[in-house]
Length: 343
Image (cartoon, rainbow, N blue to C red):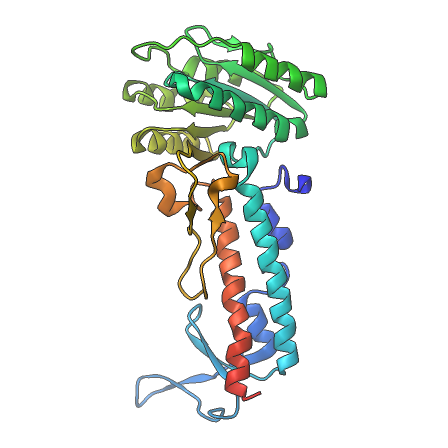
């Protein structure tokens, strides 16, 4: 689904969402019926609904606007809308599968054409190192390969640049970047001594880029957080933050705050310790629950965020899911209408 690259879910919905296809509940109801009229009765001091249609039409109450609608369309038209909605549900499922697979689950979605990735391995555990390298290689092969320019900077006492400035994306440059990641040596320290700010500021000097992606493994020490929050305001580009295997909620909250202050996006990922199947997408009013099997994924969201799975996908998943849930709920119109109409 390469056509989805560089396309935010907001933009994707503008092209493929219910509203663009005139399939929201309000849009459909205007085509298959009419709202029951109400008028204010002075003596009762309240709105009173008309009763002339009682028993004449199937009716449906909508929580969206709190109104009762009389349905006048033929069953064939209702079935036609159900087919449209079924297709919409399938496209949303495909989008969700895409968002939660491969490098997008690990890193989120790269939306810009020219980026620098700042690699902060200051809190990495030795057993995580190979996983981090594999994750970055996947990002380079699946996403960076589709944009125009990129660079990488390694956080250390003296920031280590892969290139002086972002260079053109080619098959050769992607291979060279992967080789650089594989050869970078890491020496664990008992206490984290280096802040990522110098590397971020160095990335911000490159006038050829559009955004910075700050890839943080583990936690960010509290003593560095205020320094980073203040320092990133000097950077003229959005700083998107990616949390990889954070140990606690404080780091995740901090990285979300940092990305917010630079008007950018946040993403979180944690390594899966065992295969599991979870239902994170059931919603009240939807028959049955949908499950995504995490066996196809390299990891999962941090435990404290699993109850808010959609929001941690940089809101992309949440936006898609809301539309998908609306589609499923509205397919119930068919059975409701047929039963009430006695067809």
